[in-house]
Image 1 (cartoon, rainbow, N blue to C red):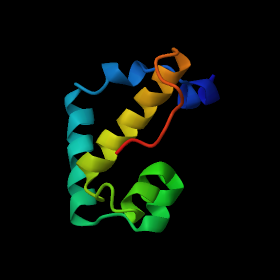
Image 2 (cartoon, one colour):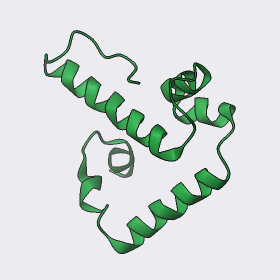
Image 3 (cartoon, rainbow, N blue to C red):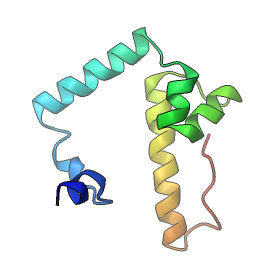
Image 4 (cartoon, rainbow, N blue to C red):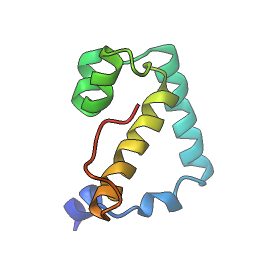
Length: 92
């Protein structure tokens, strides 16, 4: 169960985003990543598609750009699974 909760494809996390402690932690993370952008090696480990786009100068290391692009990447996979797109691709 612990493994399933951690790696579930469920989007239950949407229920936690409005919680003040979660919103505060997210803002602290964004602030820290703005002040200290991650090295490309770390970015490539956790967000490989976004690291490639940063290297290609298609997006910046700005946390908002990285988050937005990652969300669009995931949405693209859902669209593909629903037959709404030909294939998933990197989103710029």
